[in-house]
View 1 (cartoon, rainbow, N blue to C red):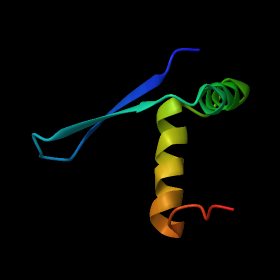
View 2 (view 1 turned 180 degrees about the vertical axis):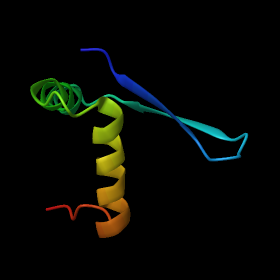
View 3 (view 1 turned 135 degrees about the vertical axis):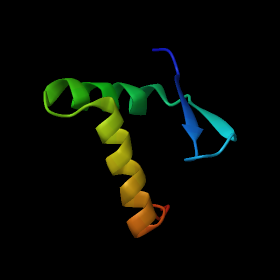
Length: 62
C-alpha cells in the first residue's frame, strides 16, 4: 500500500508541514474503518484522532 501523505496548514499561516505515514498496516486499518462507516470521512477520522491526542496527550509506550 502506498504511504499516506498529509499536508498541514495553520489558519492564516503561510507555513505548511508535510508528514508521510509509512505504516502500511495503520494506513490500511484507517482506510478500512472509513470505508466501513459511510458517515465517516477520512477528514473527520483524522480530525477525531488529532483531537484525541490534543485532549489526552500521546499514547504511553509499553
